[in-house]
Length: 224
Ligand SMILES: [Zn+2]
Image 1: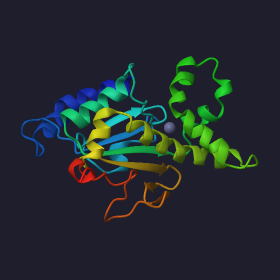
Image 2 (image 1 turned 60 degrees about the vertical axis):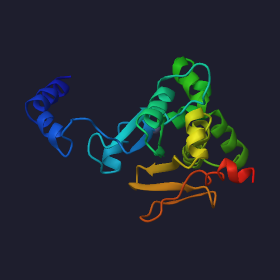
Image 3 (image 1 turned 180 degrees about the horizontal axis):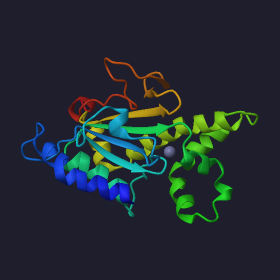
């Protein structure tokens, strides 16, 4: 705890003033993307993307999960809704990672009787687990299953995201873009899902690949 307090005092003494004035005179952060990542301490969105504090709107939880829209909206849903509706952010990244503890919990759900909250939370990724079970041979080893689940979970959360009315509407009108990333902790590399080919591909500069298909034509075009 001492290290946290020492850091907070050092921040008060010097860094805070620098942040308030660094290209941002009003002191109001203007994030340009939402970044949904795992709580795993090895996954630090600002470090992974080399962004300054305040540049990205970060939402972190165990397993980089976005619950589907429903009557019992929670903190993740509220954060994303605020970022998209109030801040007008147009790019949302869901970033999973290799060696994820939450993915391990999903694969070993039967051993979670002492962790009811975790057990309940990872149900938002149940479809990902089912897809992995259905598509991988029974002989696949745990590393392979875990890796497949990390990727499949990102796609599952991208689908969950689209159940949120504001996300669905903005996607339909071309005002929002979704990206599905998997960060490889061992290699430091990132893969991104390309909806056009249905595959994860290495992240490259240039035109970013989207995790969803292009928006539908405008309503007037649909109806002639
Ligand atoms: Zn994780």
